[in-house]
Length: 154
Image 1 (cartoon, rainbow, N blue to C red):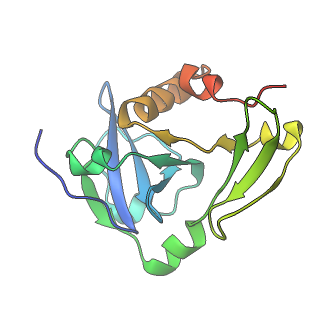
Image 2 (image 1 turned 135 degrees about the horizontal axis):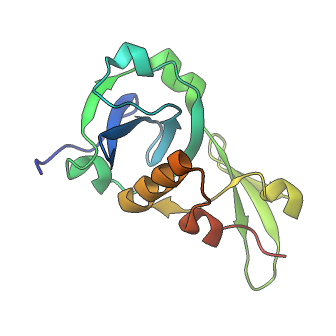
């Protein structure tokens, strides 16, 4: 596997999930990525994937692109990146049980109900392998064990 480079805001990466299937993601403010909806079975032009809806947004370890595992295949316009950037994640203090919302655009936390937290992603940095597992499970219509392990607890 060839060496890549650290992704920059606006880079589109291709994620191979096996069986000839691929997903694409847009690098936002590091380490945030927006994973785009729609499976590809062959390389598609960047202009064909950049307008897809967003499946989910996650923080991802730098080495996904730096290692060449997720090759950078193009870039999107700065205005499109700005429209996608930012996410709200939940954080939970597992000792006290308190839950907060963390807004990445303004770097603030605020109290959050369990029900609202259960609709958000957990504030965690994912490995490339775990994201790939989640995308495969999405294709197969099954719950992902990594995602399930990070759900808020009552």
